[in-house]
Image (cartoon, rainbow over all chains, first blue to last red; front, side, top):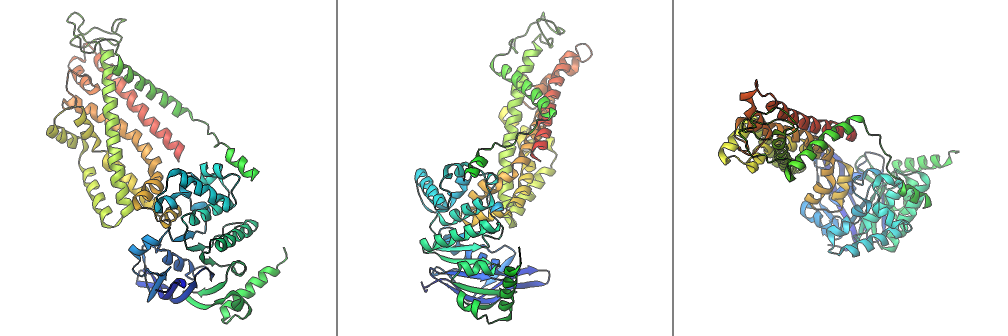
Length: 268
Length: 278
């Protein structure tokens, strides 16, 4: 039990059921996320990064199974994840998803969904819940319309606003670990920048440990302290952002960086 | 932010109402209003008999004529309508609640619990409905509450099957996963996030279950094991009319017409709702 690590994973394997037995999608990866640091997990689609994040949050899909020599989240052993992760989920681990538009239930108001986290985990009066929600909306930059936002339904708001709301939702119960799974992929470029700024400011303010998943090198470079590169279920490189970006070890990382550089050079 | 405010103030776009929903609502509301009059204050005492007025044809005194005991058919119809509405509505609600709970739990839990529950529902569904209702009424005895129970129980599997399907589909939606990630109790997530997905389908089914229940009640009363005479019911009045069909056809005509209008009204409302929610 080491408190220094927000996430401590050793030899994690995740397998999916197929016609002929099991296919492993994540193949024995090990990594640590230190407390109060932002770790980026990067890789192309299908490399297993989302799956890894889901397992840490206790959201393994039903047709899959996992095993690990060690899987500790916030100092708790969650290898036997059914019971233990129920306790940690939501309260101590916040999760921000990729598509804010399809992550909010269309028939419930924002206010109701936003406050679910605290209503599930903390015994508070209605007014206290409401005040906290409004304060959190102000923190994510929705101060002026907080009341109106609380009353509205998801289809009435833009993608950027919804992602801010998702962030507020994840942070409201006061988690110590935030898992952000491609939080800006579904947003346009300008909104992306604003949401990223918001995320880094908030995580610094609240002293959160963060696991940030992305396929975009430039995003990782801007937001993260450490970076881990995944390719086809293997963790092929990890280290601080400065080190990996200036002296990439593996060919795959070099190719990723080159692709990003090429992307940046393109005339608009 | 100003733009956002404008966005929030915008009303939902109003949809033009198709003519069918207006017409069917009109029929249904008319029948409901007649039932309410029957419940509160029928124009004449539906029980009072008069030897002088037996088999009177429709007239200004008796708008729809009288029956073999000289009772006013219009007044009896209003009271019968009130009873049938109550039984039909009660049976529909009974089926809705029972079916929704069973179907939702079965669909959300999946695995063997769901399998067992749905196989039980299939077995109940496979049993002939009227025979089941006859059997139940014979066991628990006639009366309004037992009619609600006997008729309602055969719409339970229908609602259960529909809810099951919608919940199976709804539980894999991303926003349900998101609610689960916040650590909500499964029953809470099921009730607030998954179940609304099933509501449109259930609403349509409610309309047709209501008309089926009205018809079933009429059938049971016609057979003489539903609500007992002298309390008037549509089915009971039709059953009385059978013997006098040649001499006093109004005895059968008006109860039949009321039954028809009620069922058509309810069914077309269901169709209209279906058109709007799809």
